[in-house]
Amino acid sequence: MTDPNVKPIIRIDRVTKRFAGGVTAVSDVSLEVGEGEFFALLGPSGCGKTTLLRMLAGFETPTEGGVYIDGRDMTGVQPNRRPVNMVFQSYAVFPHMSVAKNVGYGLRLDRVSGSELNDRVQEALDLVQLGEFGRRMPDQLSGGQRQRVALARALVKKPRVLLLDEPLSALDAKLREAMQLELVRLQQTVGITFVIVTHDQDEALSMADRIAVMEKGTVQQLAPPAELYEYPSNRFVADFIGKMNLFDARVEDGAAQIDGIGSVPVETALSGPLGVAIRPEKVKLHADMPYATQGAVSVQGQVSALSYHGNETHIYVELQSGARVSATLQNDTRRAERPAARGDSVWLSWRSEDMLILGE
Image (cartoon, rainbow, N blue to C red; front, side, top):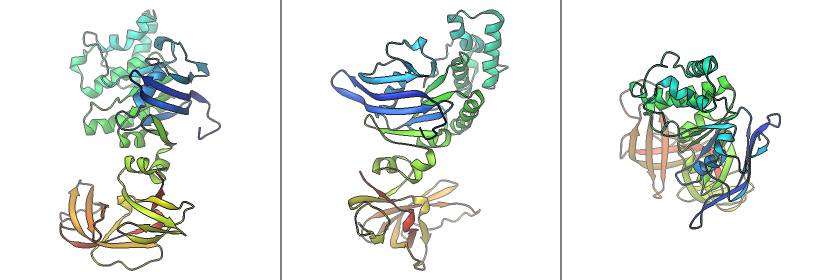
C-alpha cells in the first residue's frame, strides 16, 4: 500500500494459478488494494489479469496462496457469498426483462421485495443517471446505457468491492472516453473499492489510483499512473505504457554508449548492457542544428514517415546510423501545413535528464 493510513480491503498473498496441461496463468502474485481505491490490473492478452480477477470473484480457485477480502479468507467461499459483485465485458443484461427488473434481479434472489426493492432499484438507477429508464427494455437502449444498467445491477446490492472485467471494450472511442469519466464519478460517489481489468493503457492511466502492470502471470510494477509513465521499472513496462524510443546501450562511469546515438552523460548506479529510453513527446524537432546546451542530446536524420492525429503529429526519423527515433509534436496552433515532410533532413534533441536507464 502507498498510504499507510488506508486500510487494505483486498489482500492477495502469494497466489499462483495453474490450469490443466501445466499452464501457469498467475505466478506468485502478492498485492494489496486499499479501501475506497480505484485499482487497475493492466496488461496484454494472456498476462493473467482476468484470471486474478476471477479468483477474487470466486469463479477460479488458487492453486497456491490465499485471497482475503475485508480481512476474511475467501478459501471455499462461493461467489454469491463474497462481498463483491462483478460487471462482465458482455454486460449480461437479460433481454426479456425491463431495466428495473434487470437491476433488481439480485435483490429478488435475496428475497428483498416491496418498497425496499423498488427504492433500492430507483436509487441505483439514479446513481447511473438512468432514473427515467426503468420501464424500458434493453433493446431500446444504446450500448452505453446497457452498460449503465449492468453497473446499476452490480451496485444495487451494495458490495464492498466492485470487479469490472474490460467493461468498456465494446464501446466506440468517444463513448468509451465519456464512460471513463463516468466510472470515476461513480466510484467517488459510492466510495467503494473498484478493481478493473483492462488491456487499454489510456483507460487505466485516466481512471485508476494505482495500476498493477502484469506480464506472463507476474506483476512487473505496481504504482500510481504518473510514476508508471515517468519511471517504469523495466523495458516491458516502459514499452507497454505509452510510446517509447528504446535503445540498447552500455553504461560505464556515468556515461551511456547508446547504439546509433553515441556517448551521453547519465546519472545512474546501474552499469553494463542496459536499455536507454526517451518518450517521444520529450523529443524536439529542429530544421537546423540546435544550439548546444549542457546535458542535451542532438542527432541528425531524415524524416521517414509522418502520422497526423489532429491534436498531435507523430514524426519518425531515421538517423544516419540506421536507428529510428519518433517525436510527438503537439498541434497547439491553428495551421494546415505539416511541421516537416517525408525526406526532409532534420535535427532532433532532448535533455539527457529526461532519459530513462532500464534493466530487463
